[in-house]
Amino acid sequence: MDDHLELPDDLVLDISGLVKNYHGVRPLRLERLRIGHGEQMAVVGLDAPAAEMLTTLVTAAALPDTGTIRVFGQTTADIANQEQWLAVVDRLGLVTDRAALLDDLTVAQNIALPLTLDIDAIVDSARHRVETLATEVGLPRAAWDRPVGSLDGEARLRARLARAVALDPGLLLLEHPTAQVARSAVTRLARELQSMAERRAIAMLVLTTDEALLREATWRVMDWDAARGTLRERGRSWLSWGRP
View 1 (cartoon, rainbow, N blue to C red):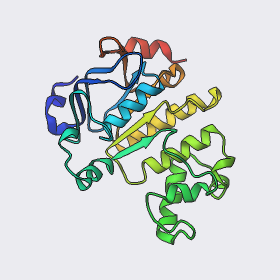
View 2: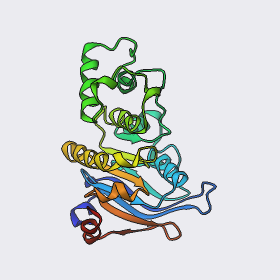
View 3: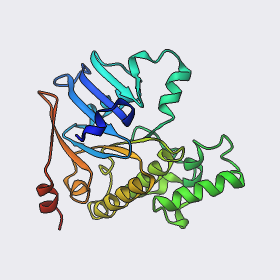
């Protein structure tokens, strides 16, 4: 990684020597992962349980058995109270199927959840923000007042993405985002996700096994070795070869 990212103040996520037993075939191991401000990275090879556990660790909902995780400079093991925990979590945007959408509520109401408690009658200021977010993530106007339960996988992903960026997080973490998305939509989604991250200058960590998603990315792509916990970066020759 570039030398300037060796400075702790320039890192949004710094994982070192991580080992976590989580009832998988083997413990989750990650020797070193560093993401700087505004950097987009994909890590390939974590299955759904391993990705879930890594997300749980990054959000400080669990602690590693060994090793250190720093998020925005805060060591997760040193978080002492709910106030400190919220200060970290509020700067994370999570896109995961485990972050439940409320199927009986509309798309607009689901996006509004981080912004206001009054989702039955969204006030004008919040409504404007909701519509801006929905537009940014590519949700058509016709979908805004539809129940989320009526949406396909692609639209549900877009709704999750809008909600994840609603509070302008410093790090966007996506767990297998295209698992429920039609193959024909993945290329377009990858390009739009990359464009949004660059426009917002937001750091992004994508946990995926979707090679179609990666072919459109100019993110750093790292292959994870489950046994050793090491990451190996794919060269730019792979990127050039992979694109149509």
